[in-house]
Picture 1 (spheres, helix red, strand yellow):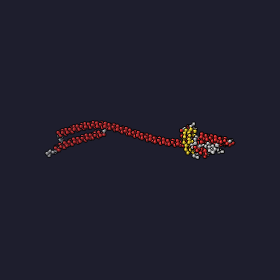
Picture 2 (picture 1 turned 90 degrees about the horizontal axis):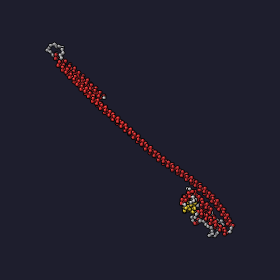
Picture 3 (picture 1 turned 30 degrees about the vertical axis):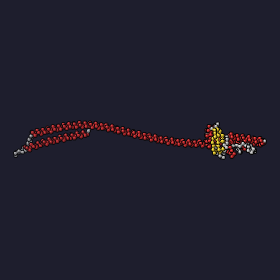
Picture 4 (picture 1 turned 60 degrees about the horizontal axis):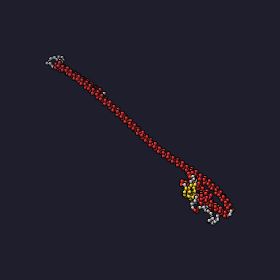
Length: 361
């Protein structure tokens, strides 16, 4: 718009300058025509000069015509100028309209591009936010997984440690309880065996004293019967002894023909009575039974065990020779951890150091 105004101002100045120049030119022409007429009239033959002005009508007409032509030219120029100005104004208006339309279109395109750029930036920002959120979620998931795995490992380790501690504690308590029960059972068995041994000794002494008062034949017969009864009782409890040299001797009737003066059940077993052997065999069974996990599982069952003992009562070896397989297996395992008491005497040890034990529940 400012460009069109500037062009109009320039056109106006050009018209004004052109009009001024035409006026100046017209004045110069008039002035020059006056000078010519004055000089011509002043050139007479020595007469006195008359101060008069003579106007040439033809020159005036020509001058007038020139002025008219100039005015017509000026009018035509003005008309051309106006026409040109109008044309230029129309062209300028058209250009301005086209420029405005172009600028409007450019502004529209600029706004559209700006909107697209804005949308693209927002989309990029949203995508970046989503990517950041996804990365944060992935990191959080990885951290949670790592934490859960660490907690699971720690929980498993703690549970294992706790279970091991509880198992060790339970095993220690069970061992302590079993040892206490075994000691109690051994003490009770020893007490009972001692009582039975004392009773058996008293009865044996009483029988021996009564037998001494009788005839020698009756005493011999009675002693042989007692020896046979004692041997049978030991065999019933222990089963077969593992070797013949440890089997109870049945008396001296086939040897020297006369029993010793104090022979009875003790004479039949080389100084170990049947009660002593029975009591010690009972102690062995109690010691093994105390190490069974649950003895009630094997009630009414039987297993024949072949045992080999050291002089201090420690178990050298043990095998099963028949009976219930489950009880035999449990008894073998229990015997290896059982604390078998020391034999009460060397005589008892000699009779049971390598023997078969009839293990019953």
